Length: 167
Ligand SMILES: [Fe+2]
Image (tube, rainbow, N blue to C red; front, side, top):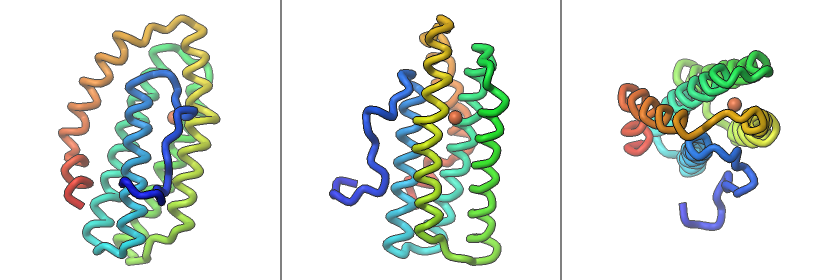
């Protein structure tokens, strides 16, 4: 997406200062941008369904990893953070079902909702755990190595990558 009209433009201030997590957040932004293009260009149902599926799988995998990090670091606000994750996954599920089962189109409002949720969540909530873990002296290096390998394995098994690239 080289053009000027990128739906969701990544900014350095979104960084949570954990490389693995930043890379995953950026990938979520990429998938969301891909969905925006598919909806704008009225690409077929199959393409849109594939991207929605990729978005859901990627989000699930990413949240699972983030939750593991917070649990291992004994982060005190793990529970409310997990509740936020659950809410978004329910929303995504509702969106995908509407589209696939009820054959309702995806509206730009929904894409706008996903964008503001993601941005608000990264800036408002993810940066908090990151700061707290850093203050508590949690060592990210080993965790990042393990997490990257684990994430690759999880992603392969879900085939989301081929799905959204092909879509
Ligand atoms: Fe999060």
